[in-house]
Length: 111
Image (cartoon, rainbow, N blue to C red; front, side, top):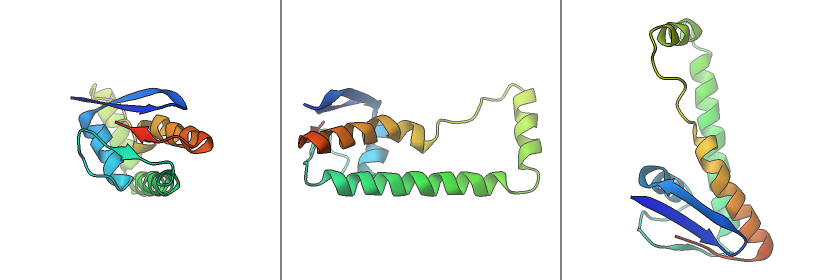
């Protein structure tokens, strides 16, 4: 299933269900198939998403700092293993941008 986020301030943002549910949970919303983030709720949602992105990046840096992490990554690439996974900041960026633009124009975001 896909989630389509809509706002009068931006183009639609479409995400796979699992990714959308993750971002909605971080933003303080349930995982209902339909909902709204009001213009008044947007600043708190943006703050929560940015905090989660920062925590994810810190965890990634900590993992990279462990001894042997670089050697393991090179070995996986040599074996044809998949590349780096898509990080939270990459998934959240379009949604955060939508929220910022919507807040600037005073519009709600619905899905």
